[in-house]
Image 1 (tube, rainbow over the protein chains, first blue to last red):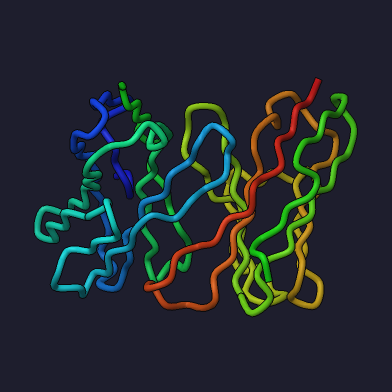
Image 2: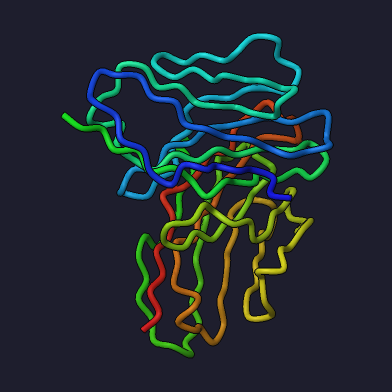
Length: 114
Length: 115
């Protein structure tokens, strides 16, 4: 099974609206972290938000929040008040403590429409 | 420290030539990772180091690929006898330890084009 599944190859959102990017994961490691990264066309990977497997509350970082549903193994990224600069590829990733490496999904391309 | 640094940013080489990329991680980070990313895909794990020890290599890392991290500081990734299929972005990342609570910090990547 894929460790990270992102089922939305592309998404469009109107400027100032909210958008949810889906991510499901598969692991048997009880200690793991879930991460979202943004990759603009320039190519650098920009860290957005983190959720730990033992965290009780959903993570938030400014306009980014993570809808963490552990039983369903999902970690969806919510971007509120979308801006034109949010147009980019978004990658969900998992770090499993037992494996000591970060595994990425195939990404979702988000385009913000003025 | 300004973050993870990779050099060169771009490399164009002829098929059959050898290429070497360098990664300078954040200084206090003992874990260093190499990833390969092709167009439209997420980064794929290649190998990682804990200090100077190379602890894991992906099946993607053929015999033509070798990575080193002498003295546990910077790392190099060498590709021998390059093929057109090696064309990709090569990303380096570092982390400070084994905890799952810390993100990987990425460099800006080296984009390799094999012609």
